[in-house]
Image 1 (cartoon, rainbow, N blue to C red):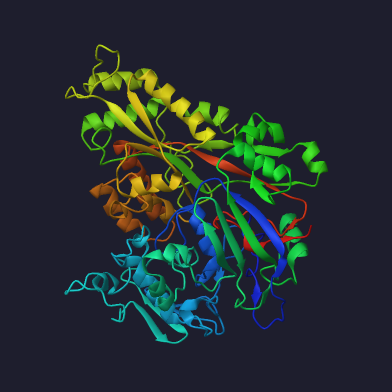
Image 2 (cartoon, rainbow, N blue to C red; image 1 turned 90 degrees about the vertical axis):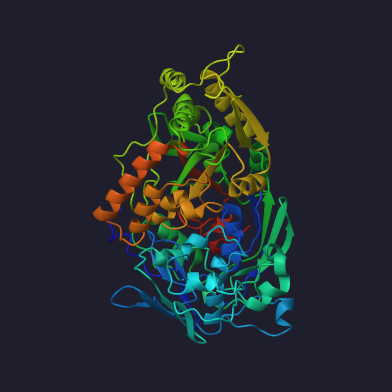
Length: 590
């Protein structure tokens, strides 16, 4: 798509417009297919928690809802920041009259958002006591911030100033970088650095995950962990209206027709159910209990007409079209992979025998088969840590090991994984060889396990599928207490930095799911994050991907097509590659 065609104006025309509050009679019913972990933006990194966080809190910047390629625009910042000539100093002016949702922590007073609330958010991300999985977003980047987090006396003082993160006055925030950081604008638009009221965080202490207090369009009304979440419109939310100015894209024009002139948000209440099994999810949509839903994988062939030779082409079958159901479809900006626990005594480590075991496991798994049978041809292979449509992707790189069970067995033979009397392999030291594999309890998890069992049987390696809920798997990942675990990462912003960070050593315990440590990779990553997208950074990315191939901390899997069904009464829907969910941009007219 041409840049000219995508040159759409800012997401909304904010302020100065009389707008009605959200209609509390309008309810959006949606579902997660896995449980959330909590709603403190400094303590979470999963997509489900992030979906709630981005509806409750406010980043300084945001993404234009329609523009493709994705464009960063002001949110609570009055304008895009002024940037110094050396690209190390960013100065933001905040809008006035942005208020937090009402909360007992404010003792009956209306609390305005200030620059200090962002200073506080930066500090929380790097505070060791908070243990943020996203701390690398700020660590080593802002003048004085790392030193603040490691004071000489050992006790952190939130009142102590930081030269690189300062409130110059009530509405002016200044950020000073140690080195240029081109991805900063994306970081500040994603759901990481959110305005947080210190008094609210301190009021709820260790229970902040259950008591999010933000300035966004919604507030948490009820939370039954792993079961149900209720959001209601924030009565203190500033008056804004939808004012899209689309280009020539017919879908963008449709969204503008459906939403322009309406207050933002339109919907008064959002009810989120956690439905882990796919068949009940589909039945809930079919009976109009859900307003939008991703097509369950087992039903893709039943609901879509596809071109077997081209996964990029698909459409709804006529019966659904007659019902007025619409299909929104795109290739996700994501990667899915299986992380090897690099601290695990069986599959972890950096010796040649351990690398051989990981490669053999990878080569024994037939990704083409699972794309055909489980994904129903609605996916493509991962070949590079940075996926397509994200800055830094190399379409010519082939990083996935080919399916080759014979070579996998030869590799294990060569490195001393001999078969015992029972026909199964043992470790080179003669000890038992059983791979610990974290998995979920759902039907789709069991289907994936069947294909993995087949792979392990081909190389005569025993595997123990350890069943636990997704939020429990995340805990095991962060503690580096697992052998293998499936994972996915969707783009928070459309730049390779968001993906190459997943294998950066200091991110162990956070988004580095494999607990991977490579001094060579880390050096290249630290060089790359100071560079703009371009040939120099691309060369570093290629070198980093070669290191990943050599060490094999991941088994590459696939990148999914997102097929979302929208009920006829839903208005304003367009898939966005970097928002977790688009609920706040919708209307329902039943």
